[in-house]
Length: 330
Ligand code: HPA
Ligand code: ZN
Image (cartoon, rainbow, N blue to C red; front, side, top):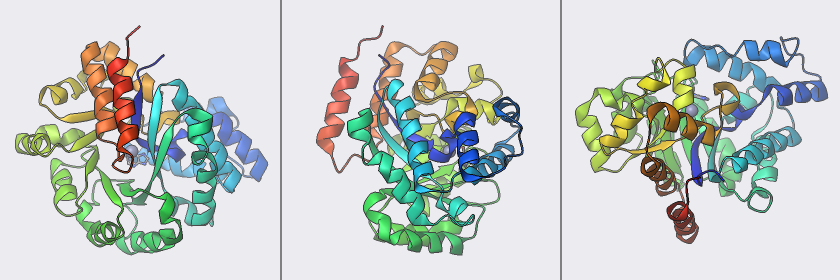
């Protein structure tokens, strides 16, 4: 049995496996510019974030109906359960769907058909986090928050993703303030490809409670000290960092140094269909390649529940933490 863990950095659209993409393409009469799944997998060679995003947005064309989103989420939850995930805070990118004529309601209701039954079907509690695309305008983000209003009972928080460099967090000051007024939790991708200053800005201007990636904080010792002092969680995605060339090789990943510095790190899969592994695959990769001890791995699992947005169910968080404490490594 894998170590019990929460997954806090997971784009549901990034769980679209080639086989499901082709099945949905056939069902929806969508033509994919690849002859078969092998040819599609061949395209999974990324030189940076943008080269990945191009394919990520292209393949979304197959997602059209509530049933498509349900099947996508259900397939992720089944895989996650097998990898020890007990709680998942799941990102989705509504602007990428609305732009293709797929309404917000189709996306949220479709995802909810799977998430609403996830505890019974997969033993995984879930939360939804709606991300804004930072390479779209601030007005578009505000319109998206407006479109989400009827669905806020199902949405726990907001995030910020897509192409980072050139789109600093401050661009989204207004929509983050509006979301805070609505009682939404706030996270943002920062310091994946962008500079450490973007992490500081996400904290100071957007009021984020957790930083997605945050890898480049290591270039700024004062920022590291602040993140440690304020107990700001970082949702790291080691296999993603290798595939998108944020680090050269996994052996050079700064995770051990980050843990030694006292940062509240978590390990996540980001876009597992594209980056070669789900949650426990990431845990096993860092355990093997970076030589993390069992106690370090237990710390990462504990951190994942401490960093999760379970303030609305502290009893559940306590149960998960007890599972981590009682876990026996095989
Ligand atoms: N970074 C930014 N945007 C994204 C990512 C990511 O890793 N995955 C999906 N959208
Ligand atoms: Zn991400």
